[in-house]
Image 1 (cartoon, rainbow, N blue to C red):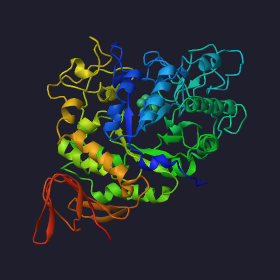
Image 2 (image 1 turned 90 degrees about the vertical axis):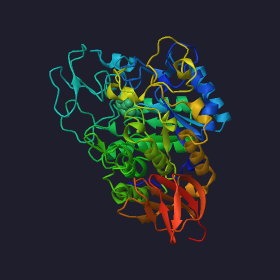
Image 3 (image 1 turned 120 degrees about the vertical axis):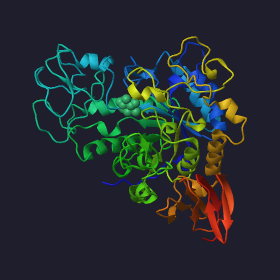
Image 4 (image 1 turned 180 degrees about the vertical axis):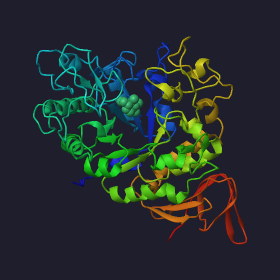
Length: 519
Ligand code: NOJ
């Protein structure tokens, strides 16, 4: 079943900025970022060209998975502030024309959540079916992860991710053991979706503009083609269309034809999943060597990079958007994969594609991946979660006045910082800001504009037209290349190009945006 719906207009011009609240700005000197810190940096967000935020989970939690283990969905974690603070964040953001998405974790809770504690009791109660339990403590069927022996209830409970994240029960699609599996259509599992709807409404009523949705495809179990999971999300979408038509849901699904067309999400992320656009463009490595399209030593061709993307773009057009990302809190930073000259070309691509782009905090100044000990279930991801670098002349680079930080800042002498890059007209920050502003100002570059490939040659050059008259030409290789399209008025340039004998030659690591009428 494919859904045809209108999408909130504000997504057309949206350029998102992802904030990891632990690490953005510490306003009270306790060594960890907080909501008031984010509020104090909203002018920075706006100045950088962003008009929408996604904030990683900021709810009450034991933080065994950095907040993706929610204990209370209705309460901001004390370490970040209060519910009043976040309402003030919504208001202050809206005053500046910035929308705010929170992070919804619908697939699991913390094992310390009250719902789960009740569900684990031996006596039947209204939470007994809120999580997935087998009918005996000795039964842990293959194919899922279980915990047994941790509660007096005679059953094992299913995990959705880490040990402390029991799976919420939205039922099963294909039932293989009717003794304990409940159909997703059964009224015993309906309260789970209702509870999640309540969470959604609670925060939308207080001013949130929507949610990024964690593991959105994980709700119904044994649902190989995701039809049952999609049917639940369509109910959520119908509720939004009716009561909150401006609200937006962005799924962590990485399969837009299903997430957007079938489940009714407004947007779906393009993550580092193998074969997807951002994998082929930025992240792909063979051994220790980058082989993605934007690496000078690329093995991935422009054609290979675009093939599936263009197909999915055509399939989802008019229903919703794909969201290319510069990175996120789960992968090594972009600077781990691409050097600065490569990233400058990559940002032109990211910010001129159809869909809704997301920039991970700190990528706009080229923050590094700082490998270190795991924190709060981060493992290798911890190195991408270090504090934002505001000013090289301030203690802790301006992140916090504390002596001890939640996670240490990048102590490298050349750690890139906001204040210094703002003063340098040629900085990466200035490039990202200029591109974000250009994108918002030019309807051709908006989320829904056309993308037509006009040159895609085996020598690495890619040139595409967006909308009526805006062209983007890329040469990410380390050699000069011929552009077979006449260049019109330049709108943006990184690297350089020259004309010789009637040909246009793009210098190594060059990206240009130009306009040409009547094409
Ligand atoms: C995806 C999130 O991005 C990740 O950080 C988290 O650990 C898992 N989902 C589990 O919620």
